[in-house]
Image (cartoon, rainbow, N blue to C red; front, side, top):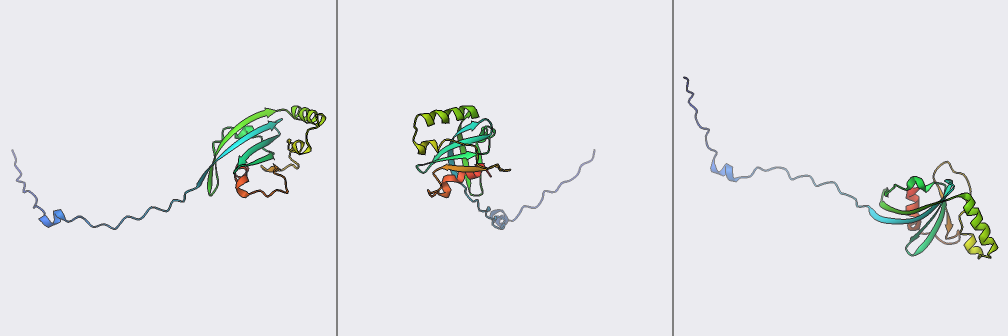
Length: 158
């Protein structure tokens, strides 16, 4: 049998036990820029899977637009993010045929519907665009449109 004699290590000085180790102060976390959170409530009707008539309200004002995007493709989109905002999208979505729209327009013309209401009915986009785009139908071109009123639609079409 072999025995090894072990000597206990020396005890540290009492002042070393009471003095905390000095470390450099931690770096502050990078500044987190808060994005503005907004809810975008949309009512969208897709006509013939060709174009979409979109209605929404913002700050008490009504907006209507015709989009060249089939909003059926956006049905699962819950949020849209821009550099300064996050839009939560809540959308009511319906589908109609072009024939149903044309029949409705003819019926309203025969019923002497006011001209300002007829002009607010959707029509196909005025020009074909190779990218997502929308055309504001209401308010009309003469009415000033605040950027905040269309910010959500801009985000959806970017």
